[in-house]
Length: 253
Ligand code: PEP
Image 1 (tube, rainbow, N blue to C red):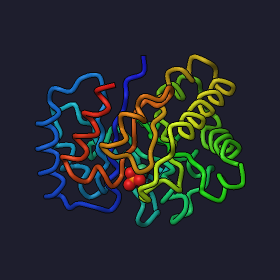
Image 2 (spheres, helix red, strand yellow):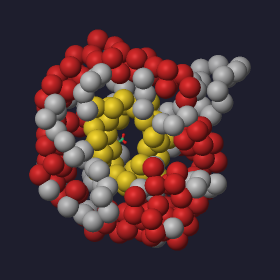
Image 3 (cartoon, protein in one colour):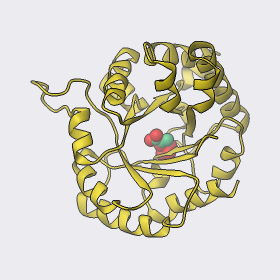
Image 4 (cartoon, protein in one colour):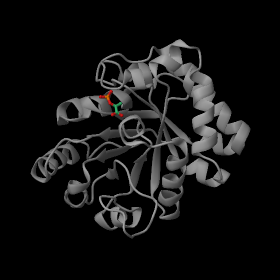
């Protein structure tokens, strides 16, 4: 059975103080939640404080990105070893904003993924098509390419431990989410591609989240789709009440 994951991507929002007060409230509210993994990804500067605020709770802390080298002359970069030391258990890799604004290619995603897995942390790997790619009928081919190149060299056991987030780029931060049919088609396709490449067992174990304008109002319908194992939530995760409503909505299915 795949345990659902509800993950909050805060992007470049929240100071240390704001992170701690959010997590204290959120951890108290979710103390009784079982059967789901809850994850919060604050900015790098708040990871240590977040992991301390969430200690003893069932909320895990994620980083929003990483660099693949352990250490060295890489000004501005942060290694997985440093993230682990600060208390992160998950690392988001290949978010479309990193791909679009900061030059992450499938090859860079693959190197980051390798570093996260080698450190024993759980990667949340983002894939998804742009609007142009969808309009050109290339959605499934783009997903295939991102899985092939992004996950190249991984073992079936590593794939089984992965979290993949299917995030159609046109749905991120736009208020426009994929229809259940669009999400269902993409998720089933990704799982089929994983099965063909890494075997049925790895594909059946890998959690595939949906991301893109997830809100309390649409989480229940999204979670009802076969092959949707949770959500990666941006804007609607920034307030405790809204993210808690999403966690609650996901639990109802
Ligand atoms: C995201 O940042 O991964 C995301 C899905 O954002 P939003 O929920 O705001 O669309």
